[in-house]
Length: 178
Image (cartoon, one colour):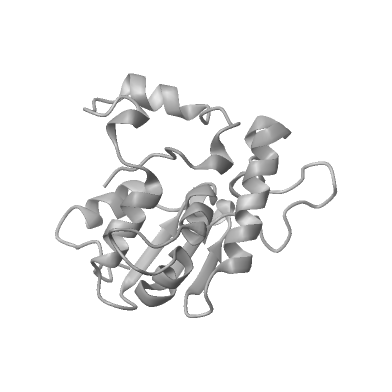
């Protein structure tokens, strides 16, 4: 289900990512702005609370701001657990697309990869927000959650049309479609 950054205070000083207006303008969707969907934290908490323990795999393919907000969240109508407690109880795996391995850059000129520090915007508040969110997320992820990092170079070589056909032709979201 879709969710928006909503009232995530960590994101308030940031502009939408450059591709967001293009997606909204070029792709048909009943959703045209963030006021039409619940916050990402509410969606995460509602969906996680309804799942069996240690059954959820999350694929993080962008900035870690929503995961950081979830980890900071408190109990609500969906679960008496904190966000960190909910992650520990429900999530078995966090697969993260981010970084460039074995190093992010051969020298100091190019800095870190976009999903960890918003390099796309040449720094500024987005860089500070993204870097802080990534650091908080990985420093505070419960030890029960296995984390796998996959660098962006690997993701650029994936046969995306092939994977999409497999995912839409009988594999469920939880199926082992690899």
